[in-house]
Amino acid sequence: MRLSKEIKAAFFVLSTILLFIFGFNFLKGSSLLDKQKTIYAVYDEVDGLLVGANVMINGLSIGNVTELDFLANSTKILVTLKVKDKLNFSSKSTASIYETGVLGGLAISIDPIFERESIVKTGDTLNSSVRPGLTELINRQIEPLSRQLQSTITSVDSIFTGASNVLNRQTQEEIKESINVLTSAIKAINNSSIIIEKTLTDKNTQINNTIDNFEKISSSLSEVSDELNSFGLSDLLTNLEVSVDGISSIVNKLESDNSTIGKLINEDEVYNNLNSSIESLNSLIIDIKSNPKKYVHFSVFGRK
Image 1 (cartoon, helix red, strand yellow):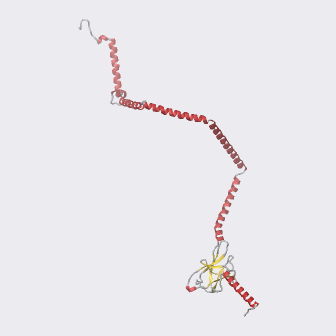
Image 2 (cartoon, rainbow, N blue to C red):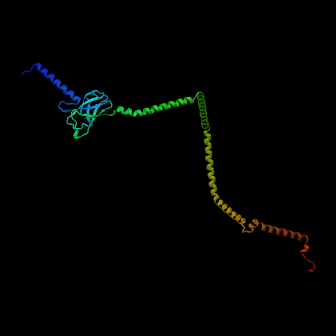
């Protein structure tokens, strides 16, 4: 049996439509062959969530968003989800909107709770939440820094304002004058260093000769010291030290009260007695000279 061109065209159109439906549902993450549950979640805002966004559990796609609409007589948004029927998590689970990447794509992640008494079924509504995205987290971190930066800028502005009030024209002129004086001093020091460097360069030969002379003198003194040592200077100094020790011992004995000379030096009584004896002896000698006959008796003819 031969088919007409019209029947072939009809089969081609139907096949194309079926392929289109299957392909569209495949791209949406659903399948006409898999049995699915239709569940809901209500949000205050969805932050740009789109129909066809993936529904995930632990990073694995289990369905997709099929519809977004306002809840009746409310500004809240009702999100319709289709998930695989074989999943038996609890209706107390939470559906959270989150960012899937830096570009800001959104998806829904279900944080499952497994309870046999409350297994989710078509028509149930899950708890909902919105996780902060990367942009919001960055804004949260930047906001305190922004406040601190604003406060710092205000403080710096106050400091500059106070400085401008303090640094009036007269103060500015004095600062300029001080800077000029400092610059002149630095130039003078620089010129002095140049002069010193030039002097050292010009007198380098003389300085080297002077250093050589010092080295020669030091060498000569070393030779003289060696010669003195060779002449027995060390023995001479040793003998001199012994002699000094002997003289010191004699002086100590003279100063001692146990010796006669020490007593004579240190005791006034001995000195007075000796002085008195000398005076008596002098008087006796004078008297003998004056009256010799009184002390010496002699006769040519013999003693009477």
